Image (cartoon, rainbow, N blue to C red):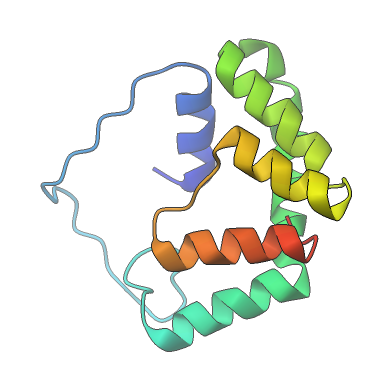
Length: 124
């Protein structure tokens, strides 16, 4: 399931079950956006994308795409959606407070550091 599909399904209240058993053969290749992309060079590349504003661009597109589904979001996810859409354009301290208040996080320690750096640099 792509990240956006997961975001839509889970934010509207559907239950998503993680299955740790691999059941789909997926061919990895150098241009993958998702998958075995955890090396140092890949992390450095993603950090560069964050600094360039690409993550901000992606987040803007996601906010726009979810706007039509806003009323279908669970109350908690509607709050997080509204807060994120607001605080990402706020002042430095309000961005940090909003990130803390919404408890947003990434899947890895390095991802979480990048998330907080993105908030510091107004790249959310």
